[in-house]
Length: 300
Image 1: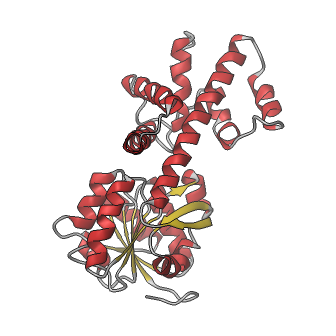
Image 2: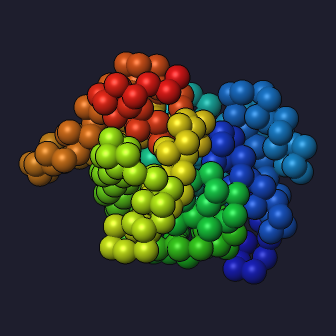
C-alpha cells in the first residue's frame, strides 16, 4: 500500500454519474486508475479521461493498491465482492477495499467478516454531496471499519472529499449515510410543501425562496434544488429510484432496531407515488411533482 503523499494504483468498479467524477479526481491527483463497469461506454469515458480499461472485476483489482466499488445497491456490491471472479477471489495487492455505494449496513458487516478472515481490509465509505460534490472533490465521506485501514485509505479519500470521518466499526459509515438520507428526504418533502403552499397563495416563489434561505428554514435542498423545483425542472442528478432504495434501507435498519420512523414512512409513500407516475429516472427534486398532482398543477 502506498504511504501518504505517494501515488498508487486504484481499481475502480462502478462508473456511473458519481463514479466517473470520482475517477477524474483520482486521476487529477496523480493516481493511476484501472476502471471497470458493466457498461462499456462508461469504461470508454474513463479511458478518455486517462484511466486504464479493465475487462473484469479481477482485472481491475490486478496490481491495485486499493479497490473502490461505487454501485447501485447491495446485491451488486455482494456480487462484485463475494461472487465468482470477485474481489474475495482476486483481491488487490494492497488487500484493501472500500465500498463507497449506499447499501445495507448488515450486508457490510457480513462482507467485512468474510474478507477479514482472508486478511483483506474492507471499509464502508458512502458519500454525500451529489454529482456536484463528486465533480468538485468536496464529498462528505462517512467511513466504517478498522482505524488502520481508514488511515491507509486516507490519501485516496482526500482527493474525492473534503469532510472525511471515521465513524467506528464496520457498518457505521452506512448507518450514518442512511441517517443522512432520512434527513434529506424529509427536508425535500418540507421544501416541496412550502413551494406548493406558496404557489397556491400566489406568492413569487423565487422571492419566497430567497427569504427562506436568509432564515432558519435555510437548507442545502432549498438552496441547490429549490430553483429546479420552482422551474419544474426534473432533470436527473441523484435519481428518485436511488432515494427510494435508500429509504428502503433506512426502514429495514429501523425495523431491525425497533425504532419507529413515522416521518420516513410518510415520505417513502410519496416516493412510491413518484415512481408509479414514471418519475424514477428523474432527479430527486422530482418529488415536487407529487405535490403538483395533488394540487392539480400539472406541468408536463
